[in-house]
Length: 239
Image (cartoon, rainbow, N blue to C red; front, side, top):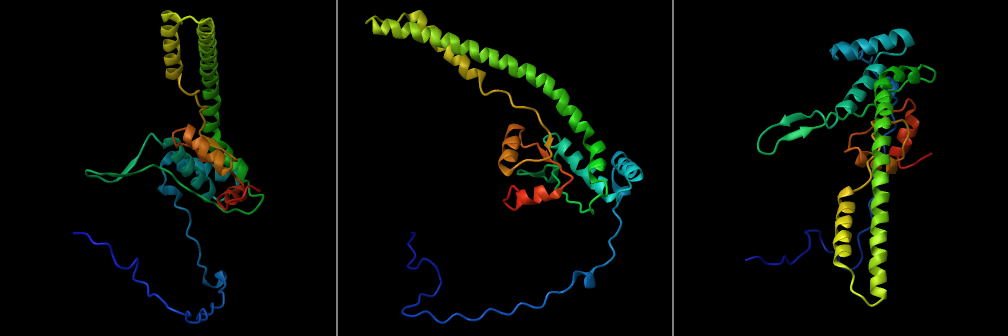
């Protein structure tokens, strides 16, 4: 049968004084990256789907920015639009391994190279979708709030009658108890308020990003032409 081990681990147990610490190995002298740098290959924009590749080339032609920037942004935005709609099955079988089209891209460009104007046509579809979705969302939210207020008023009225009967030493009427049970069940079925439909944001703390992902079924993108904010968030800072 199973026996409890006599030792917690195989580390040696010292009795008395510990041996003196040994000096760490010296760090080698830093090497210049310029000495080992090689010429960067061009971004394979022709390997992209024609729609994305032609769009990236058009942005480069009008904005004068390196084609790698709009091409990488187009890939990231396309992945964000497909999240929770498409998946790639890496491995099949009884327990398949599937991956969502999530991409994490960082493009480094000098200041004043037109990063924000290059992003505008790429995010236009997402901005338009969010604006249209807001119209329907406001109607749904208004209907939810009206239904919630009505149920709360009705429940409060029935509870008031039940409390009055109890205070007078009388048994509450069965119809009130039945109605209260029905109203509370309807309130439970009403559930949580509808969430605001959003696809992306240009600025969000890690907590806000987590809430947005939770509200949108983990489909959310953070797109910004200034990576300093995103890197600060990744490092655990907000400013």
